[in-house]
Length: 171
Image: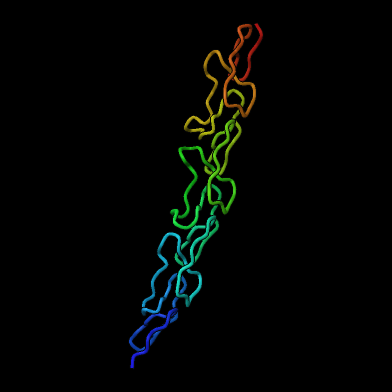
């Protein structure tokens, strides 16, 4: 008489069954099935189902999850796992375990996927990556910017001359 294999076990041979191992599920059909979906894992053995990765975490193998690192977003189930912050150079994330990226503030530029930085005097920043025009020099001969964290340049008044992108002198 053959005995049915219960859930949490799989058929090892015609005469033996084994407990389902971590990273897999065993639903009672005699097979051990990997938790292979991007948002599924199982850190325990002897289980009939996989667990779902939560927002702020990502799957790190079939048997474990890890906290989302700085510079990444981990939106949670059904959203593709861990993703680096980018969105055309306008996103960053300076905290761990986050489900979304932050948008670079006006007056700042994206220094990396983990950091936004202040726009320096002599420049304007519209909230993008420095390499893609996030920090733009006040290079027109008629404008300058003496302050940091600004989103525009200032026109040099007729009674002044521009010395540098951040300094003007009275004539």
